[in-house]
Length: 299
Image (tube, rainbow, N blue to C red; front, side, top):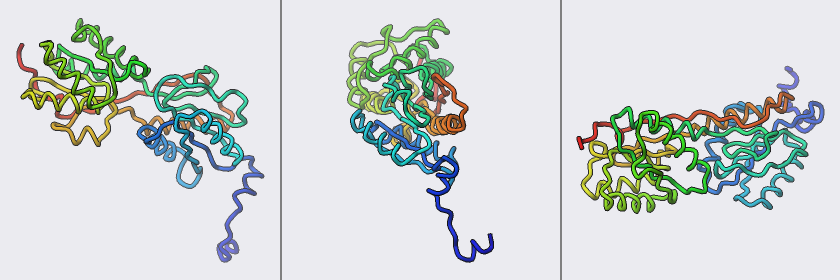
């Protein structure tokens, strides 16, 4: 060891890989363009693998199956020890198949093959907890302005919200979610429709933080106090939206770094031969801020 230190000897990683059968590298393929979900998952995975022990090759497939296959071949040619595949939404995605020569863990979007390993956020429980937070804050007339109905996250969150309200003998204002887009524009449009309908509302639970920002814009322009008259809550806990809102926005954090850590843990286990199968749902958490504080006005 003294001699190695004197001559600054560095072990040859490729030679070590040939001896051990492992290269100390994994591939992460994402189908998402802006990194909103994949970057926190990557950070969590890096923390779980440990600094210097495992390197991660990040590839952006841009939701293109042909590009994904190209990245898959490139990563396998570099003899990665395993793969983490991150979806762009929580809808089930096509499996890479059972003939891949290394273990694969699917994160955020589950594989459509029950034999695969998938780690996903529990959006049903997240919706339940969000509605429960509003009810415990004294809100009884809750509207849910949701995102795109084609997204599993929208349906799952709505199911959890409905279940929570039913447990308190309450129902959604309008009897069902208002599905739309994941945008501030949809939040503004839906809130304008709400005010024109004269529904009695003391809380608006939004499918994303972007929607919530649009909701708050219209409420503020209409002279409605947040949260004294109407509480507002979002989903995703993106600080660029939540902390810049007036007042700061309560939201549900999807714990994506924890999701990345669990995906890495499951991949390490699979590389060691301890493979699990099926979908594992991880908890989310409510982050309460000023937009849901205070008491609703008597109606």
